[in-house]
Amino acid sequence: MYKYIISICLLFVGANGFSQKQKLSKTKKDTITYKTGYGLRLGVDISRPVLSIVDKSYSGLELVADYRISKKWYIATELGYEEEKTFEDFTTSTSKGSFIRLGANFNAYKNWLDMNNEIYVGMRYGFAIFDHTLNSYTPNVTSGVEETLPYFPTNTITTPLTETGLTAHWTEIQLGIKVEVLKNLFLSGGFSYKIMLSLDDQKNFKTLYAPGFNRIFESNTGFGFNYTISYLIPFVNK
Image (cartoon, rainbow, N blue to C red; front, side):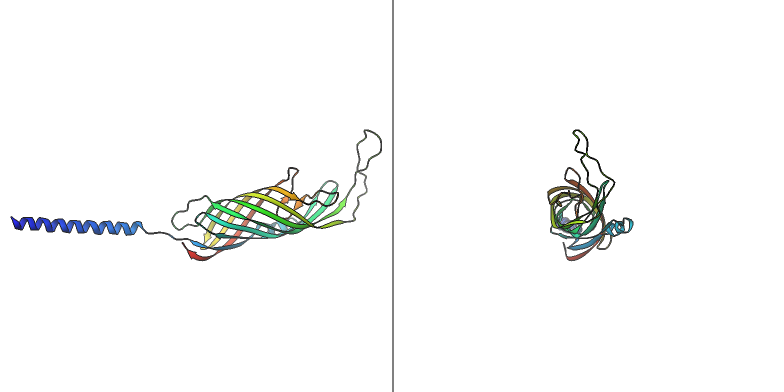
């Protein structure tokens, strides 16, 4: 009788030990984590050099950078230089200068395993300092006759008028995607909606284009697009 009891006890201990090993093995498998790189990502907007080739009235360069501070948040900035010649019915003007945008991006995309892609929403504060030149213009002339509208004579004034040290301040909302096409190499595209906060105008002429902001509409709003290529310099994996 004792022999059977001892055998049953040994069988129970063996089965319990095997069960514990299985649980431990599963626990180890379940605790595997995939780490991604945290560091500085540097790049360039490739659409601006292309636009400079296609459109001879434009030239510009924009550098981009971001730094990952948490799983979802990035500090981000863009800075560059632009020169744009604007043609209107009775005026031709040029705006040129430097700009910077500062803010943050939130990644709304949930990556699988070790993927490092983004669908982001960003906010920026933008600042530009620029020169504005009225290259040529046709002034409107009043006839002096009551209820007669002003008219534009055929002669065009081509003496340039330049004002320097003008500034612009604005905010913008950005939406975009970033895809890791190779290890630490990213391609991205984005859209931005801009709201002008403060803008200096040339004397007797409204500024039509501000570097970093693009064309300024009557509502003091604007739009922007970018297509960038960037490389991540990982400092640590988390």
